[in-house]
Image (cartoon, rainbow, N blue to C red; front, side):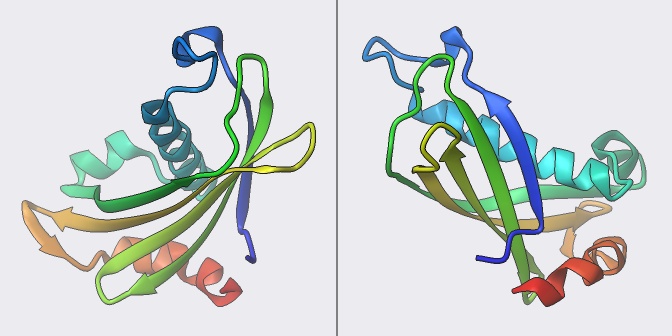
Length: 135
């Protein structure tokens, strides 16, 4: 996978369940935070987008859990992307730093709602153009 963005994070105690591993729902938070930070790195902010009538939303997510993360584990969340029709598809993998084992593999399909209607976003097409050649 040709990743275009990486973000390092650390598991916090309250993200774990009674088994001592990260609760499955928290992985979605990690994935979303990575996408938001990627967008911020391109100069895009979610609040400003919404004020312009552009709302990127998740249409579908598929997560495959591989190796559990535990409290205190440091990890790297990596992201790649491509465009399929009006969808931007993010391929997101999380790796535990101590041994580089894959914790989760996810595919996140996003679409844009522009002024209340499902639509292509010229803004995203322009901003993401440099990253789409890395497939």
